[in-house]
Image 1 (cartoon, rainbow, N blue to C red):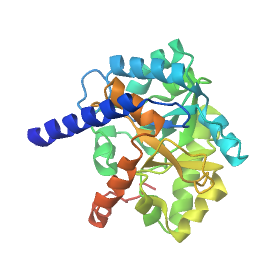
Image 2: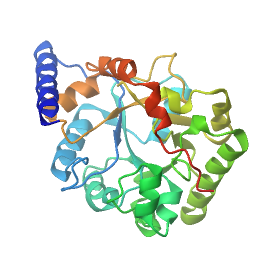
Image 3: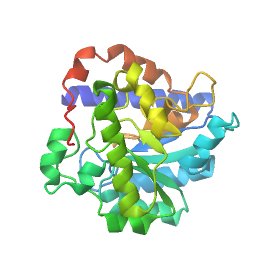
Image 4: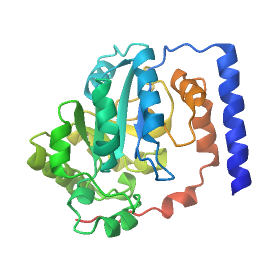
Length: 284
C-alpha cells in the first residue's frame, strides 16, 4: 500500500508540474468538495492546507454561495472564473477548524447536512452504518446556527443513503425528513441536495426525478471543474474533491480543469460491484 501511495504522489507531482509549465488559466467554474478539515485525521485536509487553498481560491476566482452559483447555472449565465465551496456530511471540525478560516477570508460555503448524523444518540454507530468517518463527531445545531449566514445549508438525506437504491415513498421520506429537521432546527429550508456517494450509479435512475420535486438543484462527486456546458444538468453539478495529498500545485491544476480527465479515468475503473457494498439502509 505504501508503494501505491508513493506512486500516486509521484504521478500527482508530474501532472501538476506539467500543467504549471504549460500555463494555467482560471476560466473554469469549479465547486470544491470537502468533508473534514482536521489537524490529525488521516483522511482530512489540514487547517494549514485549507487556509492556503481558500486564500488561493479567493485570489483566483469569484467565490459565491452555491445558491447564487446554481441560480446562475439555471439562468444560463454561469460565468468563467466563478467558484463555490462545499462540505458534505456535517462534521464538527467544519465549525472548529474550517469556519474560522472561511470567516477570515469572507468566503461563503455550503454544508450539506445529514440530519440523522446530527440527531443520532450514538454518532459512532450511525457513522459506521452510514459509511461516514466514525471517529469524527457531528456538528451541533448551535454551531450550525452560529455559522449562518456565511455558511448556507444543503440537504444530504436523513440516513446518508444511496438515492438510486430507494423506492419512491422511501426516498420521499428520506428527503422530506432531512428537509423538515433542518428547517425545524435552523429556520432554513435547504433547496440544494448533495447526493450521498454521488457517482452516476448513485443517482441516475428513473425514480431519481423525485429529487426535482424537493430541490432546485443537486451536486455530485463527479470530478470536473466546469459546469457551464448545457450538457450538465442543474441536478448533476460536478465538483472537485480536495484531499489530504493535494499540494498547492496540484490543487491549482485541479481548479483550472486541466486534470478533468481524472474524472473519466475514475469512471472507467469504478466497478459496479462497489455500489453493492455501500450502505443503503434507511434510518426512518
